[in-house]
Image (cartoon, rainbow, N blue to C red; front, side, top):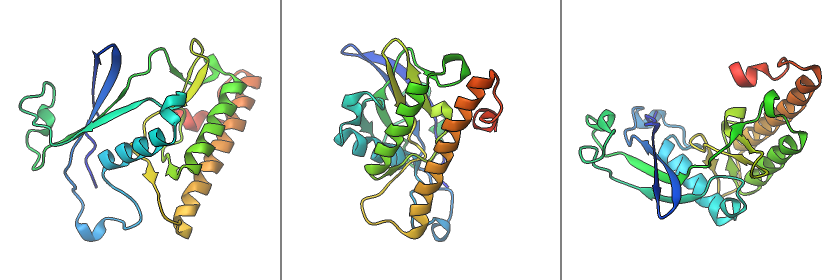
Length: 205
């Protein structure tokens, strides 16, 4: 499979606060073991999903971080903090996205049924755009009470589809919907009971 760099850099440019996520370009699996119906390169996964969703207006609405650009063929010898890529056979790539300030993952401490339902609705819209998030856990479901919004983050497990789906791919969307539906009901029930129980595995599984 593809190594995930997962190296984050924060900075500001022209008044924008950004996050630079760097990925290895090395594929460790033999070609005959790479599944034909899914992308295994984390950089391609995330950049393709962000590009599709930005084109559909998701970034402008603020329901995902803004996607600025990709940077390819980075030379790690001249970039600070990229020493882990020095021995790679291929140069790493990166995506430049908005770093959203003052957000927290949704949990019992900041629970809001409104935001929970909004996150569910946004996921439906992401699916309608042909993107499977691939990691529908609260670590990627953010809310900002100050900005009065909910948003999804981290699309490095996403898959973006342009053609009709196979039965297997349709099942991926079905399973993601079922996971999200259960989480919505479970967290709401846990909030009513005052302790994390039904949704426990989504946070600590």
